[in-house]
Image (tube, rainbow, N blue to C red; front, side):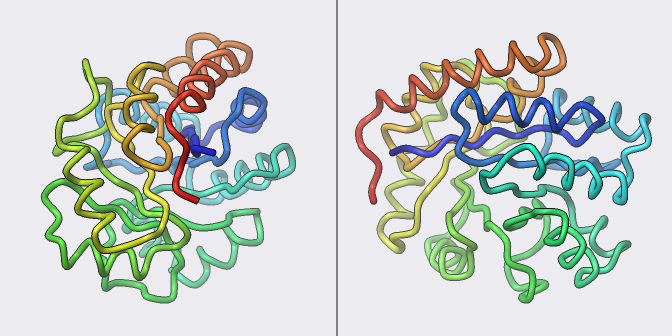
Length: 238
C-alpha cells in the first residue's frame, strides 16, 4: 500500500488535528517544530510557524504537544524542524526528550548528511542531489527517503513537478528503501500522480491550510480524499 504522510504545525489544537488526519487515512505524521528562519518552507508553513511562535510554541511546548499527540494516535510520529533548535536544546537531550514524548524518528531540514550521526532521521534528497549523495543518504536514512520533488520551497503548485520522475529513477538505481515524495503536492490528483512514481507522498502546506480554515472535520475529509487518490495509484514496492 502506498504511504501517506501529513505535516501539521505544532500548536494547541494539533493533537485533535492529528487524530483527524489518521482517521482520514494518514499512515504517518510529521509534526513541525516552528523556527524563526525556516529556509525550506513556503509562505503557508512559514506563516503557520509564525503563529505558533506567537502563541508560545517553543521547544518545550512542542515536546508537550508531541506527547499529547502521541496519546491520540499510534502511527509513526516525526518531529520536523531545523538544526538551530537542536543546537540550542542539545542534540542528545532533544533526541531523548522527543523519543520519550513519542517520536519515532526525526527530520531536520538543514542538517548536513554527515552531521549528528547519532540522531536517527529521515534524509532528504532533491533533484539537484548527485547520485553518490543519494546513495549515502539512503544508507543513512531512517526507514524511508524523503524526495524533495522540486527545487524550491514548500507550497502549492499547479502540477506535480516534472523533476520528480527523474529523481525517483536515480534513487531507485541506488537504493531499495521506500521513497516518499513531498513539496508542491496539494490536490488528490497530484497525490495520485506522485504516488504512481514513488512509494508514497507527503502533503504539508495544503493540510496546514485546511486545518486552519476547517478544523479537524475538514482535515479528515481532505486527508480521506488524498487517501483514495493514493490508493488508486499503482501498487507500492514492498
